[in-house]
Image (tube, rainbow, N blue to C red; front, side):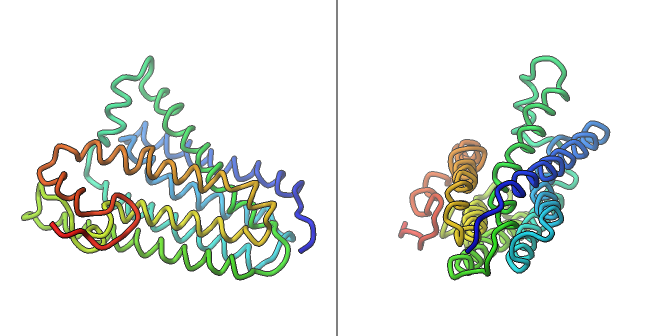
Length: 267
């Protein structure tokens, strides 16, 4: 494999940053006019999709066309599915309790605080986490076995995320399940199949750059940051803090894996 075009990659980061910022600013404007700020969660998947598409365009004439198209399509499929799911789930609901609690303590103007601490911060995270997607666009040479393994891991992640979301949505549509914990299907193997799916998605996308070890070393921070967010940040840890007082939660945690799937323990 010939040398990696670091200068071209560096030039492409600018348009990617502009794409992430544009998605967040447009979403912020919509939230201010129509509300609530929970719609920023829709912008999360859209931001990654925009970065992937802009990076694909900016890298024209660079890298391997097959790898460029592959990483762009995989990112867009994940991002658009997630955005659509969150949009459907939040339709007709008010503000997300997480944002309500944060903004209730906002010093100064509530919307400006939301812009700084929610929208711009998420835009920065989109840019950081998507570094492997951006970097993959410039890797010369054909896709190798490690990248194919990354595709398999991505598919595993999409399965857990999409099926887990579908199972939970069906569970919630049944009035008989109101107030009950979802502990069936994939949710009996892991308490967070959607977060585990995201984990696999981003480590899978990272493996697509591992055909270029130096590039992989330079971008490994991205899946590490995403893993931290999913397990110890705004994902698993925060959600379980809100669920801790629900009836049956202690028993559920005793028999069901907290993150990585495994068969449920006997009660």
